[in-house]
Length: 242
Length: 374
Ligand SMILES: Nc1ncnc2c1ncn2[C@@H]1O[C@H](COP(=O)(O)OP(=O)(O)O)[C@@H](O)[C@H]1O
Ligand SMILES: [Mg+2]
Image (cartoon, rainbow over all chains, first blue to last red; front, side, top):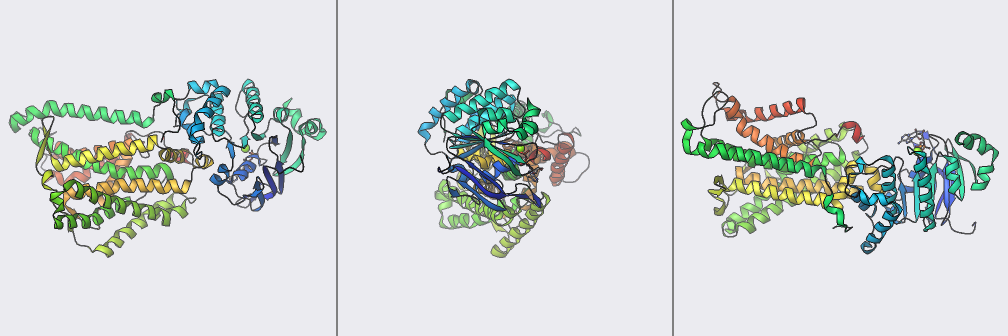
């Protein structure tokens, strides 16, 4: 794995919101085909990390690389074109648009119109419910349904790397488990997944590797098994969940 | 530009489709009322008229009908201007007070095209071609002015507090106004009279309408439908709505935010340009100050209709047009006030105040609160 080129890499990334230093010298790598999770408590900088991947936050120092290309100061749409997309925290669907229009927004940059119908069918296979809701305004859906549409919208972009910001947030436990199964299926179909979570045990149950973020610093990293058996980890993150 | 073909697409419903239908319903109701009362009113003359002002004086149905239709025509133009305010507010969350000047620039520059056509005789011999080209000139001018304003002034201010672009837009309004005065002088320019085919009256469903007013109403209605289809159905229109709802997520979908915001200004400008020519056709005089009052009325219309809402802009425009046309006679006549029609602006702005007091979101407004826009 070490000799492969990472699809996503941070090299000493620092970010600030005004004077406030958020990410501190973050290094991380995500390789093709992996599921990698980024764990951390509230306000530890998880969302900021994802925003830095997409250029919604620009690092003050350090570099963000996509497929080996330095993209630190590239626009969001440039990066989306290179195959990265995100299911944002709290889904953030376009509530005044229909479900179908939300899915169409996911295809905004795609030029291969002939494949769209097939991709849509794939979304319906993953989420049969979405098909029934196509004409409905996204704002009228339940939280679980919104999550499905948000994932569907991201998949319609045919991402190589899918970023997910706390997919378990605000969902009933049974839906959380379903959600993580879907993430595994998406990964098996060939999409690299970088998932941010507070729910460490759930995330580690599907991930290949993980990083732990604390007040903007990576304090721990390793394979999922290592992290699950790490005493520090058990105490700080897993103990609360189990 | 449908990206996905799906059997269920007919089922989709937009908020402003509903709003639009409501507008049609209200409009139809008004027409029925006018139809019932108007025709016997015309036949009976003032004495036998069913129409009375609030003070109890009878007015001929004919007079009411003319006021009503000129109100509709006037209101259609306010609606076209209101669209520019509403679209920009929807996407950027601020009122572009320079929009009246965008309207003026189209009206003023198109004068030269219209004048040249009139001198060459094409205005009369090829009225459709000449008018069409004049409208294109106005649209192009207004679009360029609107897009440049955004590019030069507002884009840099996007992250700043809301008051700053607002004040800047007032500054831009003066800048554009006096730039045009500098370029074209401060004389009134007399637009050529409407071509012969548009002289006199046409009879539509038994109602006589001045052909110029009919032109205004038809052209604005068609423009509105085209714009509505553009925003509802095309990829760019969807991008505009996406930015209006959540700019960050729109960018995440790959929308080039700067370009779509430019497009929004362009579309608002084009609509104002069309309105500029129609205005000039009705009132025949253009001037560097021509944009002031229509600009304010357009803004009023956008607020009355529900700012940020496209159908609302149109409905608000019609409402303001009708209120200021019919209102003065209906409410103020017979109380010893001299020349009530001089008070039309008082009536229009009173309507604004009343709407803001009793329905702050506007007639068709959604919950577009300041908080929601962040
Ligand atoms: N737009 C912003 N402006 C200023 N501070 C912010 C902004 N977004 C996040 N922060 C701060 O940055 C820190 C990390 O936030 P975030 O990355 O959202 O954390 P997490 O996703 O791990 O909960 C928090 O202290 C938060 O208050
Ligand atoms: Mg977060």
